[in-house]
Image 1 (cartoon, rainbow, N blue to C red):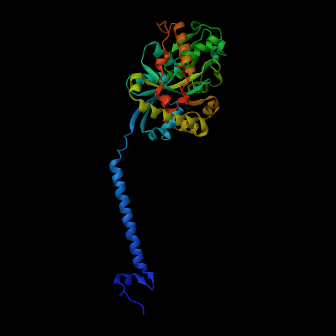
Image 2 (cartoon, rainbow, N blue to C red):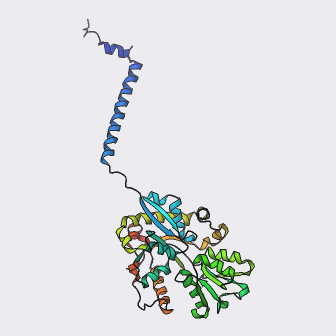
Image 3 (cartoon, helix red, strand yellow):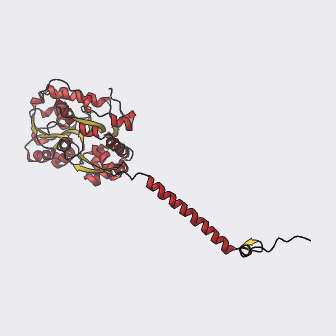
Length: 359
């Protein structure tokens, strides 16, 4: 005769029917377990949120640049595609007519950094202006040159002798013009240079105040189109390689090392986009800066986008300084140490292989 240990408790009787768990009660128990787990997760998340520091605020940065110049593509791409914001930067892009004007915006406190060609940086060194280059972002040999009027006897570079040539002095256009006429065996005083702002060159050529105009794209293409069959153009290929850089005041850059690294990372992404997605990059420039699509496409194979600080930049600045001193464009006769005008620490921290300056 088997022993009985008493009747089953009521809760067990309710919970089981025929040896199986009551479905309604099982569902209730499962829901209770889930709610308990969710409450624990929520409590943990709230605790972690209280312990984590608040997100860093986005940093404002004003960048002065010539938006009409193809070399500014890395900046415009970083802005349009959100690379600046990804690095914690709220960028304001200030449009200027040249790199020289963009650098003036920095010197006047209107911008934190500027895109600029090598010539204004070279003159900054000669004039002891404390600027520093954080990186070059673009180079090409085919975007500088001269547009002339056939009805004024301009046919080729040699025919520039004795002609009135409009140019923006102390810019890359000025240096490229000197290199071009020097290749023809002409001295600078064998042409009549007239100083104009970049935006004034086309109207001056159209009015006949000058026989030719020296500058860079896209204004060269615009002047040539305006002249129609009366126009002739020649560029400075194999004579001058244009370098386009990002620079700012030395004290500002040295005081914001983390900001410069974030800026460089965004520009690296922008330059990669411009180099690897040419069709999309050209479309961006057309939409943002109203470039001529056909002209942009034709010149693109000669454009090189990359963020770097290489020895060639240092040598170029020294060569250009010798040119300025030889042509008495400065009272200075000693060579500045242009290594002091390059900020190496930022790019060395972000992309050390991109720094090849010997120092």
